[in-house]
Every structure is written in C-alpha cells, then in structure tokens.
Length: 180
Image (cartoon, rainbow, N blue to C red; front, side):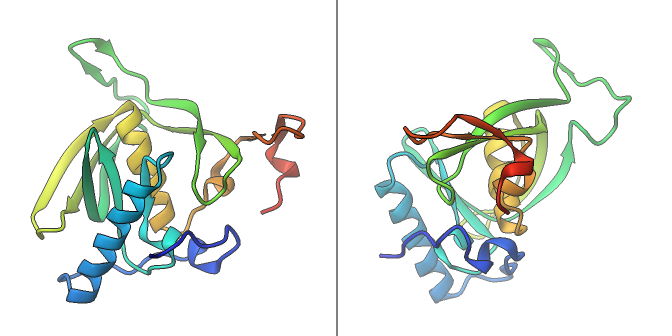
C-alpha cells in the first residue's frame, strides 16, 4: 500500500505530469489512491503527489462514492473579473471566502486560506471521459486545494494564518513564523 510522503518531500513542490492516455501503471496508481482514500477516514481527498506519485490526478469523496479527477484545469473563478457580480437563485454570491483548511500532508495543523467561492473546472475521469463542472463553496474549495497540490503549491505556502491543533500548542500563529 502506498503511503503519504513527508511534508518536506520535494514532490509536493513540483508540478505534476499531465496524463495523455491512461496506461496500465497509471490505472493501478489511481486504484491505489482510491484504496488509500477509503482507508483514510479523515481525508476528503488525496492528490497523487501526496502519495509520491507524479500524476496530475486526485481522488475525492462524493458522498459514499469516490470521484477520480485527472488533469483538472480551472476555466473560470469568481475572482476572475472583479467588477462582475455573481448571482444565482439564492442571490449575490461572494467572490471569495476565507476558511480554515486541514491537509493530510500537514497533520495537526489548520490553515486559513482565502479561496474563490465559485469555479468552473475541466477534467477527465478514470474512464477517460471529459467533464466541465461548476462548483461552489466547499466543492470549489476542495478542488482548488487539490489542484494547488498538483501545481506544487503547498497549503502552508498559501496560508494567511496557521493553527496548531496539538495539545501543547499555543494555537494560532502568524504565517511569518511558519517554517516553509
């Protein structure tokens, strides 16, 4: 079984390799990623590079099902046009929302990150079918977090504040004090 790499592993700071056509080996890696996510109770998603695999892919939970996302590409975010008003049936939606995020690569810490509230993403699934989805709120945040991983951006690099969740910690510390 594949395991999470250490938070200092250089694979976490490098852009992952795009998949043109799924090979047998890549399909096996995707199966291992899905298995790892099923076995990791606290994880909402896992990117390939978090497990030491250089593939532009992640797996995430969609209710009781697992979704495989390959070659995700952000087409649009609610931050793209500052003058545009984004509105749906519930009213005007925010451009971005700050929120605390955890990460399996940095256990015991939460990170305050401001992310786009809405996004459109193109991706391929494990059957090599292409999709374009519009995501908001938590789903947008999850995809943006995992796409950051695939682009070599760690959650600690983007954080405005860090909260140490260990029992002997002092709580929130400014990112200027975070070792990067």
